[in-house]
Image 1 (cartoon, rainbow, N blue to C red):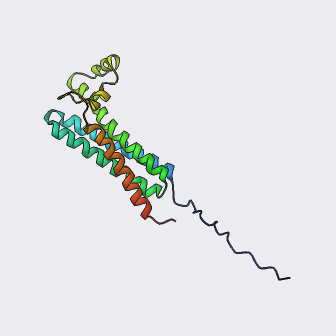
Image 2: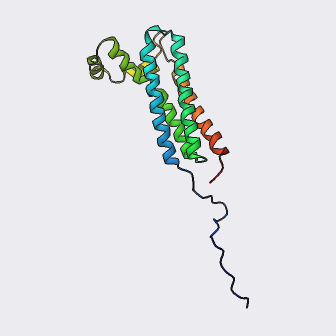
Image 3: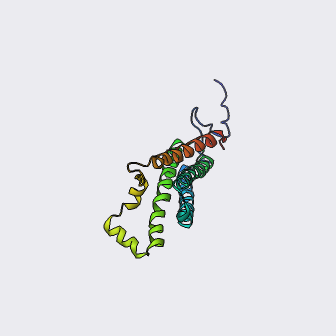
Length: 174
């Protein structure tokens, strides 16, 4: 028989598993959500401040720029905090798209309150609470669908997922 050998000072992780140190996918999603809310509120405020002077081209450019910025901020934060977690990347894409949507739709009640009165928002909610979403989807000048709206969602989601994947895959594990 051979003499007993001392045990190694630590247990090595099994092959194929990586330690979870330094990755916080849930925290990354919450951080991305809060950043998306802030970017959307800033966009709604910008629209409220400039809606009287905007052309259709300016409004569409601001919306697409907001969608790209929202996706970039969310993707950057999720890539930095969530690292390689695919669930966090997908959640970031969904959050960025929702941020682009709500940034636009939250500006409409603010414009109604500015044009008429804050009581007009209550009237809008009684008549049709989906007026902001219908305004997001419909093209009022030509009729039909405003295709810049879904394009903004795709841009926000693609920017968020792409940046989260790019930044998360380049970060080393702790």
